[in-house]
Length: 252
Length: 95
Image (cartoon, rainbow over all chains, first blue to last red; front, top):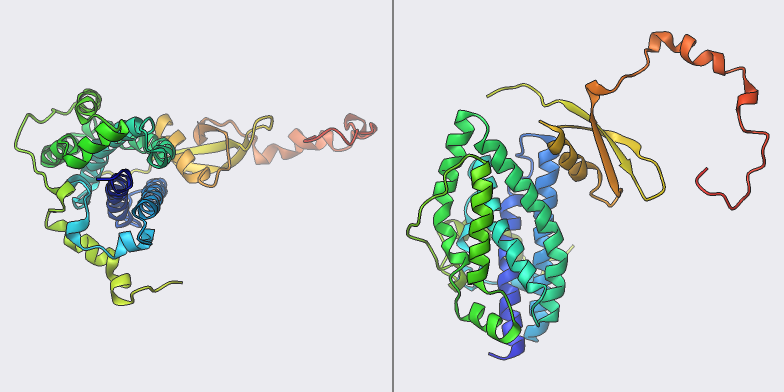
């Protein structure tokens, strides 16, 4: 894989994570329990979609076939998406969305931090911008996890169940595939083993503060990076891509 | 589920260094820390500020409208307390 191909594939994957989580959070617009939370959620989802645009634009440039950010977002089939299974999981209740954010963002800040120091200047630059947003998102989501876990008996039980349910999607974040290996070797990208150790420590601290139990080692779902998604993903794409699929090239 | 409303907080924002904080509005929040983040998410989305203060609305001691006369009227006829007899140099900003 040439340097440009590597950059394009890796930036696309980063864009996929950001776009899919952003789309999931957009689905929650107008559903928040408080006005302030509503604004925060909408801001955060737009942050993610903004990151996706930057990663896709860069990926399109590296690829050199003239594909735009919109082509990458709206014209690809399900199996070409390489986002983590975690970010495509349905919103569920407020505790489910909160846990999904905490687990993903705890990983994403560490990944972005490593990427700011990689040899791919384009990706490093976007990572430096994105990490400021995601640090704040993580602060927000982890404060909510503590509030729910250390809240009432009901909130504690429900958010513990969310944590237990979503834990199986965390293994994929650390299992390096060929693209991760190439990024590490050729671009001094993130070492996922190092990221994993730090992630475990950080997540354990948040979970302990939330008075929740860390799930034990278990079978981990994977396949997102290879385009094998959970059944929920097709519905998300169908809704997100509907307009461009029905009226190709539509603009306003 | 409790239908109780979160307490109200007043939000003050300093738009840039050197200026003072100004009242921007209010937010609901369960505690001080959440009030600060809610204020950030509600009032600084379009880069309106560099610093935020929040304070619980019920902790603000306010003057009583019924006492307006006693509080404010005595100052109205004392023109000599206004610094209007000085010329302000053009170079002085934000005064």
